[in-house]
Length: 174
Image 1 (cartoon, helix red, strand yellow):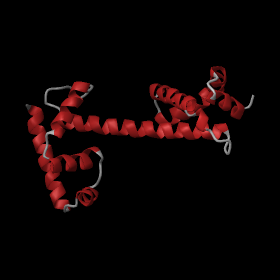
Image 2 (cartoon, rainbow, N blue to C red):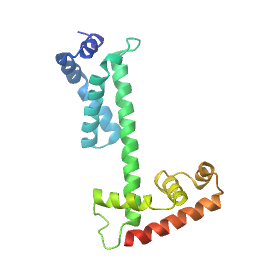
Image 3 (tube, helix red, strand yellow):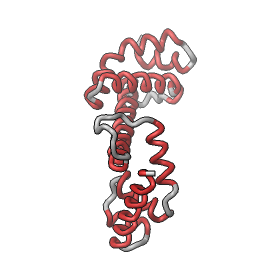
Image 4 (cartoon, rainbow, N blue to C red):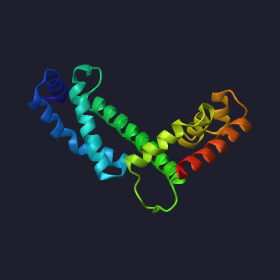
């Protein structure tokens, strides 16, 4: 059976057709994911997400492109989403490290408790300080971009960001 026929059967709930597509494409999709993510575990996770998406969205497949084109589009989008997630998590970890209380190892992994403490502390900042901090430090927007978003001067955003950092340091030490 060709791929388009198989995905049509998957759309009707045929698990054998799904298994056939999975085994036919899993190695190539894994390689693609690994090249994007450069990590075996992340590539395996994304591989599973890709095929879960294929199974759930099989009925949305349109025959105006080949199945492999549709599959690769899903795979690339899932890889890019994972890269965004990993980059945001890395930025948050670096940001957490900046404010983490003294006396912890530089190589210590941050627990959910640490991240919750940071989130709760950020949440207690004044609204404009919180916004300036999140946009400049977490989202990594420039001072000028943040100023435009907040409808403030660049100097005001710089001041808000510095005060937010100082307030976070004080609150995190407690």
